[in-house]
Image (tube, rainbow, N blue to C red):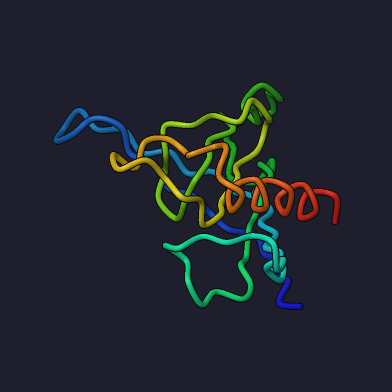
Length: 126
């Protein structure tokens, strides 16, 4: 399978112009590829046979303080770009979720998304 891991840096910027603030965070990133089960059908993903999903756990590197609270993570969920969904777990999640038309939320009851959610659990355990 096409599993991969690396240390990555996420750069976020808040505000704009001279009032903007930049934050860098290092994460241990693990991507897990899983074959699509035969019983999962999604018209918008026709022809897809496998998908990669990823977890990113915050690392101490890239944090300018010894304060462990600096390691807190929003638990944001990504579908390649950030969504408005927060997982309530202290790490980041990324998968090819089927989103609402506004790209802000995940259509949680679709079989495709349920399969990806379960694949993320596998990625975390590995």
